[in-house]
Every structure is written in structure tokens, then in C-alpha cells.
Length: 116
Image (cartoon, rainbow, N blue to C red):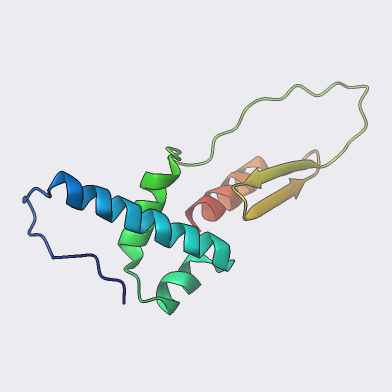
């Protein structure tokens, strides 16, 4: 099991060196996870990592401040032929949809993938 260092009681303040060390340790763990090719669930279970801390540090260090999926209107010329739209979510997921897709369903699927 990963050692998160000495347990702190809620409300205590960590020293700056301890915070920096913890941040570096989690950056290393997340890099290891990305290199493993495992899904988050597989990784933290195989490595006995706390699920909540894993997701907290992943969000914190990724700089991804998205609260959920968002859409941008893209004008499509009536002269263009229908073609699939490719949406890449990080390095791990790719979704392709054709014109006329159900946007509510697409929003739901993207939300699941972002949290995965």
C-alpha cells in the first residue's frame, strides 16, 4: 500500500516541505498510472491506493477544471458532406459521432468518460 505519510487530523496544517513532497509523490504515482495503461479503478485497486485520494490528486495535478461536459457550437456548411465528428478526451478516450446524433446521450457518455 502507498504510504501517504503521517496521518494528519482534520484542521492541522502541513509544513510546506511535506506538502511539496506529497505533491511530488502523487505526480509520480499518476505518471506511473498513465504509463500502465490501466483504467483508474484497475490501477488503484491493484496498488491499494485510496480511490478518493487518487481522483482528488488526478484532478488537482491535471489542471482540468471541467465540472462536466460542455459543448461549443460549430457551424457546418450546408455544402459540406456529412462526416463523423471525433472527440478526444485526454489521451485515453475517443468518441466519434455522425451528424444528427442524440446530443443528450452524447453529453451523458462524455460525462461518464471524464469521470472514468
